[in-house]
Length: 142
Image 1 (tube, rainbow, N blue to C red):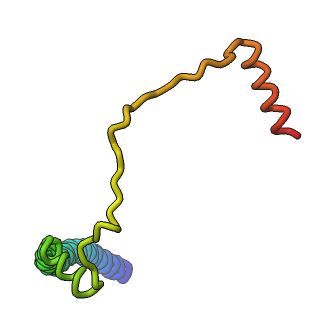
Image 2: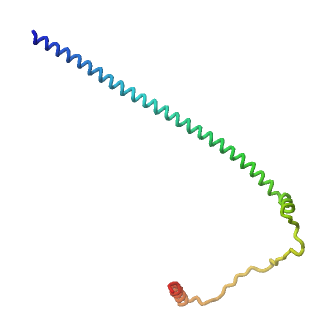
Image 3: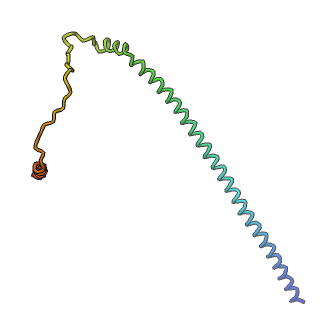
């Protein structure tokens, strides 16, 4: 009987160990599942943070662009005002003490000449070409 009782204890212990192993495997799978879900949630939150950061940068650059465009329009308006011929004449007279040219400063150029191209006839034989080629080579090395 003593042996039988001890075998019952070993069977009971074996039964407890089996139930403990199943609880451990359930706990491991639960921990893994929770870790996977937590990492997925972290990735979703991180992606949302990156998108928000990108939108903020985009808004800053859009504001900078609109400011730059407005400044360019103001500068272009000033340039257009400065290119007025009356304004240029006023600046030339007042700032640089310039005036209309006198008759002694006027120079006339005759543009009635005909446009002509003259071809000069030369010795363009094959032997002259070879002579000029080798002459250039000798000149280069000397």
